[in-house]
Each structure stands twice: as C-alpha cells, then as structure tokens.
Image (tube, rainbow, N blue to C red; front, side, top):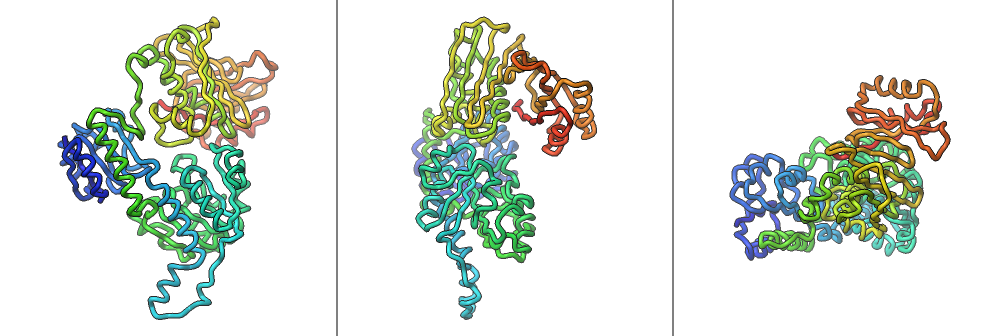
Length: 530
C-alpha cells in the first residue's frame, strides 16, 4: 500500500505510516495534478492547502482514508468521501495551544503596535510617541465560543488581568462561572460590554458573518477585534468600513474568506489600523509535529485493520444492529434536527422513547442518529461515530426508553429535548414502508413528511390565516410543497400550528413578515437533512 503525504507535513508522518505502507512525500498539487496520481494511493494526508474535491475522491479508486493534519476539514469534500466509503480523520486537539497562543499574541501585538513600531525602527526612526499603545490589564475580553481554544485563551487573558465575558450556547453557565468568567445568554449582551472581542467558533451557516455591520454598530466605540478561527465569521467589508470610521479601533486577523488569494480582500486594502497574518494559528513546530503524529498514527492503524480515533464521517455501526432499524435511521436524525432547531437555550438532556416493534429491538443506532441530528444542527463534522462522544464531552444527559404501550403505528420514536429554557417533544413514525412522517410536535397532532425546508407557524384559529401566510410565501416566490394544520387536543381549540414544507429556504426577513400577521404567534424555519 502507498500513502501520499503533501502540504509540507512534518516528515515524522512518513516514519509512522511506513510501518504499514510506503509513504510518499510530494509538493502541494492542483486538483488536476492530484487527480493524475491519486489513483495509485491507498491513503492521503494533507493540511489546508490541498483541496480534496469530489473529483479528486472520484479519481482515488484505492483510497481508504484521508487524513487532515489539523482541525478543520473544510478543504475535504466529506459527502463525497462518505459516499465512496472513505474514512476522513483529523487531529482535533493537536493545535489547541498554538491557536490560543497566536490569538493572545495578536491581541498584545495589536494593542502595543508591535508590527508598526518594529517596521519604523528598522528604518532607523525613533518614533516612541507615535506608537503609544493600550494595556489589556483591567479590560474586558469577550470570547465567543468556549471550546478548548476559547478556554485556553480565557486562561491566558485571566492571567493578564482581563475580565472575561463568554458567549456559547453549548456551554453551561455553571462551567463558565466556575472558571471565573461571566456568562452571557445572548450576543446582544456581549457586544456593548467588551473592549476586546475574539471568536473561536466553526464556520457554519449560523456563524457566517456573525460579526457584521449591524453587530459592529452595537459594540462599544473603539472596540478591538481578533479572528484566528475561520475566515467569513467576520464580514470583511463591514470590518474595513468600521476600522475607517473609528467604530472599531483596531483589528487582528489571521484568517480570510478567500485564502490564499487575499489580494482583493477589503482587509488588505483598508486604511484602518489592522494587523494581518497568513493563517498562522496552527503554524508552530510543536503543533505541526503533534497533528502530523496524530493523523499519521490513525492512517497507519486503519491500514493495518484497526480503527481511527478521530473519524469525522464514517459510522461505526455493526450491520447486525443497523439492519433491523435502518428504515428509521433518517427519521430519527430528522427528529433530532427538528427538535434542536425549535429549541432555545443550552442543551441539557436528550430523551428518546421507542414504541411498537422497535421496543423489541436494539435501538442504540436510533439513539445515535437522534444525537447526530441534534448536534449537526449547530456543529460541523458530526457523524454516527462522534455524536455520542460529543454528548458525553458536553455533559448532556442521554437516555433511551422502550415502551410496550400500544401505538397507532408499527413503530414510533419520540424525542424529548430539554434545554435550560424549555422542553420540546417531537414524535415520528413509519406509516408504511418508505413513508416516514412527523406525527406530533409538542402535543400538536400531525402527519407530514420531513423535508429539507419546513416552517412552523403557531396561530389563532381565524378565517384566512392559511391564505395570509401563503400570500407572503407566494410574494417571495417560495413554493409550498406540503402543508398540514395541526391541532393540540390538550389545549384550547383556538390555537393551531401550520406545518409547511417549502421548496426553498425561508429567510429571516420572510419569517418576520409572517410573524407580523395579526393572530400569528411566531414562525420558525427548520432545515432538515435529506
């Protein structure tokens, strides 16, 4: 077997994979160049430079595993890899220290004008007064995302005498307060309180342009921003404008929306006070050694017939467990997605109940599928392997109960999802082979097929309510593919819920317009996996 190692990965990786195969080190290649050679390799190991596209994966006829020497796997087409049965692994912890240290280094260098002062002094100038800086001691640092990197940044900032505010809906208030920081439930509580703000979240549809023109306007004038997470979390044009107006005093950015082609980035062109580095967060000798060793060991183990510690895409479900419940797997995942996207607050518990013929089966795969749906609603790279691990790491209570209570369906799944703010319950069932249905949402009886785009609209029972909602959607050229008006027998007959499947995504602006209709009690968009 052969393993292709590229992107200037530490040569220790070759020594490790050589225990199972022949390691070959080649320079970073274009898509076409990689396609021309990948067919002869059983494994591929990359950093962030190589784009492992669907075309590359298609050409990799012998590929068994792809390793990303780092955390993010945005440069690897996970869907294509999964469909071809290729394991994708990463090193989630190897660069934690490096990324955290770079964040703090940028914060201090920005505050003390280190780069500009160094450049001036190298020119033989002595401009002390020009580069008067700012102390971080006593200042308030807002940390968005309190995972391993965010936590490490907080530890260092605390040692520097900074006050810490934390925003992370998936970290509990108790954890943050035990650390010695202040927990804020919403970002709106954070914006105006901070002298410095740093982000440590993955790039998702929820975090894309999280920091934008509107949110920057809510910040304290003269705030200082740091981004060593992912390009795109901060709207580059909005940041450039805010730097030039003085709303943001300084910024330090290590990641960009269009790496490595950053020549046209507004952050490169701005006249504002900004410190830029070329994605150096994980670029330390120690971090590169750690991630190289970690991923190389996983590739070696898989090629020798073992398992991977940090697989991000392949389910480790045994066929004898999966086969009896396979028809319910997608439904279970959709129930998890729906319940999570309905919910607000920090997740506390996931409680699954199965009835009917499912009560006689091993339903552990269904519990895993529910967890995958729950976590994939707000995290990247969640799969059947890591979903239970995530639940355990986050301290979330998970339990599955089998009930012999009679049901109208052959088998049904009910999820009760508990947060620190509310409890939501969703039930699903197969009404026939290949006919999954959502049959109850918080007591509202329904029977609607789970589809990619859905909206939930609680409303008073008045004439023309459905027509008014349909008119808003029609005006936005959004097609209604299915619709059900659900009743809640335990509540007043005056309240119902429209459950609408749409042919496309429904924007927040459209939801607000629907919610503004007299008699409508809100509208929520739900995005389900296929």
